[in-house]
Amino acid sequence: KESAEINASLWALKECVRARALNDLHAEEGGKTSVHVPYRSSNLTRILRESFERDGAKLCVIATVAPNATDTEHTMETLRTVSGIVGFENLINEGEAHSVTPISAKEENMI
Image 1 (cartoon, rainbow, N blue to C red):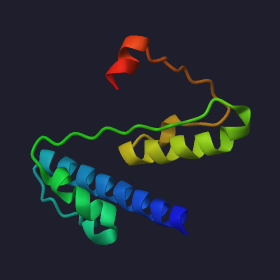
Image 2 (image 1 turned 90 degrees about the vertical axis):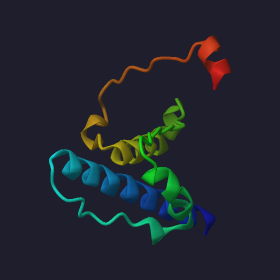
Image 3 (image 1 turned 120 degrees about the horizontal axis):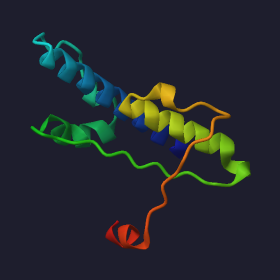
Image 4 (image 1 turned 90 degrees about the horizontal axis):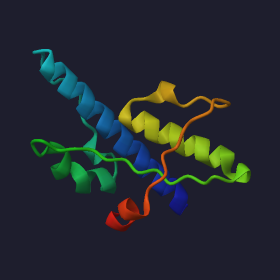
């Protein structure tokens, strides 16, 4: 039950990010911001609403994935979800080689 609630909250967060991105795109083109942002879809998006609406707000997405072959399915699903949040759905394709830049010890200490 808890994992279903988490997934529902993440889905609502993704929908809010997409709606905000569409509104920003319409605003840049000089049009109206007519896309409804569903902040009330979950407690998570209700809490984050103020952060979304703040001028100059930035979005950072961190995905935790596993390098093990047994976790490939979960890793691919995580990457699909994250890419969907930031609007790069077509970048993740199974069977393609992807490079990974490891975090240096100095950078890891900054996290």
